[in-house]
Length: 175
Image (cartoon, rainbow, N blue to C red; front, side, top):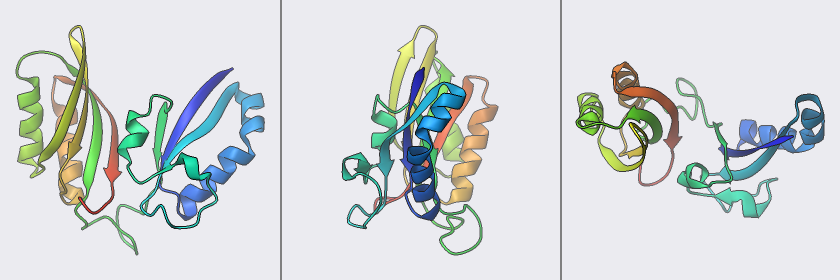
């Protein structure tokens, strides 16, 4: 049996239901698939809001989901991207992206150029190199959703970018 540590960004109506189902159906899913799906961290906007989640799992910092070595999979369950109440369509937000790239001279410049061309500024970068490959963990400054999505699409078109492995919206006052 393999245990998969799950981090969930968002614990509102949909996220809360997902968490409840993962906890309630854990034994059945494990029996059927051989995978033990364990909720290990949950990022929320308001820690003071009452929730049906163990308080020790909660964090207000979505980066803790990404940085927690016990979390193998991050699931974003936040309001709709377009239309309706709570939409992020016109709201400036930060993004956290994990990129798998070639580790060679000029790659960071190409990536920075893709963000800049889309009107997105980079807040932080962390690189973990392994031979001729590297994993980049990047956080952007706040920018409109359309600009963030445009930068992610531009990154996917770069030859040096092997994969945009994840892109997670970061909510909060600093966005």
